[in-house]
Image (cartoon, rainbow, N blue to C red):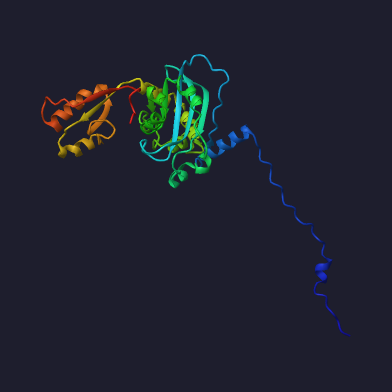
Length: 323
């Protein structure tokens, strides 16, 4: 009689084990406190650096007393670098209050406007700014609204005032009657521990990130960096405000010997080709207290005679950063 063996009989008689259930992950706490705890934990390891998204300050409905002065942070986007040939395609501005000590009060207004240029926007400008011809088609800057913000301003701030001021003065004469300050050139960012003075470096090292290269966004970013207080050190805006109160002197090394150009360049002189109304010469801009030393340098090492009197021009914030 043939005997059949059921190879699977043993397995069939084994007790079936229930399937193991996966444990559900614990719910992650949410909310400001939970976020703060998470940030503290990550940064505490020393292996992470957390950047916080920059949230624009709200426009105050009622301005606090004690901040009688009016400032405007301004940024432009343009079709190129030459204010004589290129055009503004966007202006962004934030108005704020401050006092004589350089303390910032409230945001009092925000302005943003696009403008259609006469020619098409170059592709490289669109790549940089994100502004397209379609976005600016039929757009014009609201002049009355812009005037209402700029007219009461005691100080206009741009992160590259030597670039923005000429474009703005070409666009509207009101800008030419205002005091300007440059948050790039007139703040000692390296002494404050920053690795560069570009706005992207500043905002990142301050612990923020933002949507860059749109005018209003850049203005809010600059406001936060200027108003950032660290370990009791006066804010960058305080330093900038003080710099705007000081006169500077521009010295033109006119008719300097050609073979001295490298010496001038090494000392910080820049070349002006005469096309903008300045003397065609090397020039430098210095503090008033440094004038005697600079004249001594020019007379002894450049002109080589003691009676040399190079042209000089004293500049205030109303004159600086013009074309």
